[in-house]
Image (cartoon, rainbow, N blue to C red; front, side, top):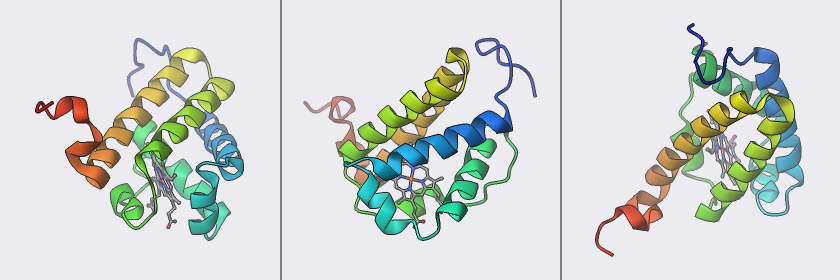
Length: 134
Ligand code: HEM
């Protein structure tokens, strides 16, 4: 894979694993979004392994993740504000486990995925400023 000019080097599998482990450790204890995860994640070892595969596929094109994130979120009681908290914790964690340039790149990916999940879950209503109608 080519090195993206803005990050200087590829992210490593170790950094991805550290990000996922530490992020979900915070998520599980978070008063706002923790309850959704603690109710719906049946097996945390499985969830962490799946999410490492997901991020490895997104960030390193490893192809290890074969699932459908949208489908997985449709049945969950997620409100739009949950995405703000999710992204806040994710950004904080990324900066704790990797250099700033890599963290910004990873957060940028997460923000784009959040937009597409929100569009799928809530439609254009999730983005009033883009609806054009005022
Ligand atoms: C950009 C934001 C997010 C990303 C990238 C993301 C990513 C993922 C992925 C890849 C999965 C695994 C899907 C599968 O089974 O194949 C998953 C599952 C899950 N996500 Fe998210 N997610 C995001 C936001 C959220 C939010 C805001 C919540 C709730 C507050 C949430 C709650 C969950 C739960 C509970 C599961 C497990 C579902 C189950 O195993 O039945 N996610 N997420």
